[in-house]
Image: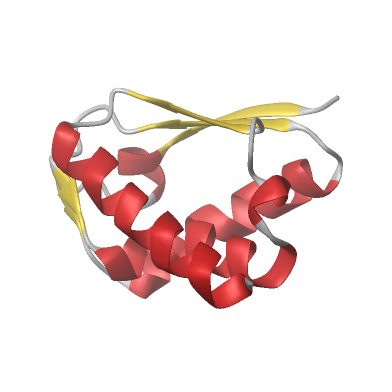
Length: 101
C-alpha cells in the first residue's frame, strides 16, 4: 500500500495563507494516484495558518462529490493543522457529502 507525506506549505509556494484553487489542484494531483491504489496520504500543514474553502474544495470536495466519502475516509491523515484549517475542512466535507448523495 503506497504512502505519501505532502508538505502543503512547500508544494503550494511557501505561503502561510493558501487560498487558490490552483494550489488545491496541485495537492489533488499528488493525492489521487496514491488514493487510487488505496494508499495513505498525510497532509502536513506545518507553517500554514489558514486556508480557504476554495483551496480545500479542490481536493476534498472534488473527491467526495466524484467518488463519495469512502474514497478518503481513513486514507487521509492531517498533521500540524490549526483549528481554523480543521473548521474549513469540516465545512467543505459537510457540503460535499450533501451534494454527493
